[in-house]
Length: 112
Picture 1: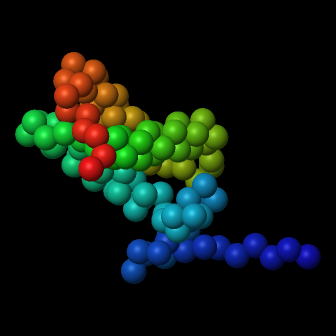
Picture 2: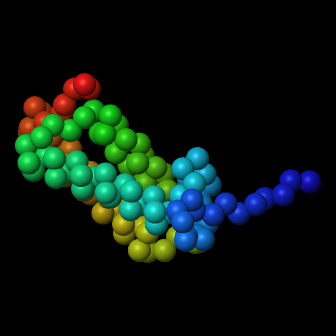
């Protein structure tokens, strides 16, 4: 017999459950979204200041976008409209960043 245990978020003080897709990160959806938005905002700020964005950072954002799309496509009864809205805001922000970078290719930096 297999016993399923509920994995809690690794952030101190957070008892929210970790969705199956985030088991490796051990983050609840809220903290995952906070991290993804922070990375996106950091990349956008670098662009606005004329600094290059490392390709690894763009790859990470792409992986987060793939997760967001998959999460939205799978849907769950536990999902709140707020989470879905945040995921869509992340995807829109990333699309805007990619559009900006398509016109400013010099801002895509090379690894050091």
